[in-house]
Image (cartoon, rainbow, N blue to C red; front, side, top):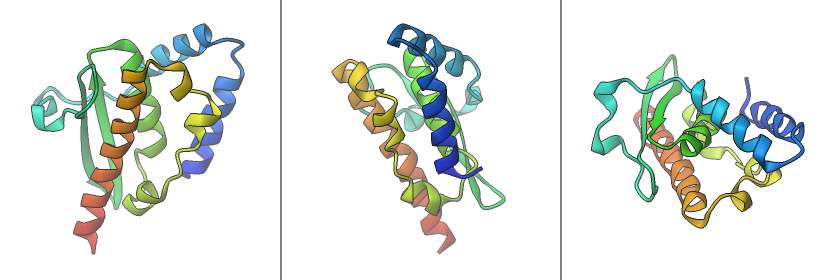
Length: 140
């Protein structure tokens, strides 16, 4: 499924909730359904820098697409990375690099996070895109 389509789905899902308490609960549920990173990849080198909580991300190439697994020691942060993995995993590296993440503003995510979590969100996106750039460079 294309990145844009997944973003539209997520925007619709978040639009179904009346308030941010319900949206946070949805994010927590998404975090619970996250494809978890294997313990062997819970290394310092897989930690996303600039996050208040610990967030590990692992990327592998499968059939020309980048597949992400992740985990976090904080439940809300786990929900945030779950949303990003849902959007960007199983996509071609160039599509990840080119992805416009405007859906984050549409659902109001950044404005409803604490400044440190919002900063962590930006760092998570940056890291996932850096993985894509690294893999795209290998392809060229």
